[in-house]
Image (cartoon, rainbow, N blue to C red; front, side, top):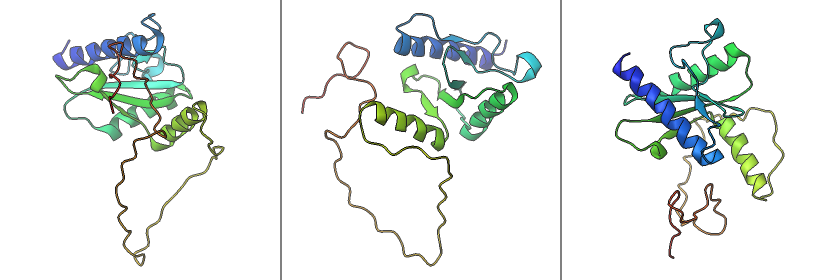
Length: 176
């Protein structure tokens, strides 16, 4: 087994363990897909790198030269070939980084749908989603946009994705 394959497999196991602990308390619900990497599955369609992540197709990448578009297209190809309806998500980290410093890459449309659901769950009034494409066309005759003044937006309207509980698994509460 090559060094890069071994590192990739190790990252998949590491990521599965981290997500399983974060989401399911370390119950073993999320695991690395056996023989993932290299497109090994029925019909050569390839499979998600992790199992036990409902509605999300995880493509894990441990590389110094990350190519986000190629990675998301790989996940989308796997979804299409397998007939899945999961959301493609690429999670990537470089060498010498902790797992929780990994980057998550997804299409804006998918992120918008996820964030919309989160805001609704938090009780924010949100519009009903629509199934249309928003396209912005810039006209050469349009005036230059004004730069907004930067304001400190910290305050009661900030949504904390992970509560700060001081238990060693999140950040400590800020003392303002």
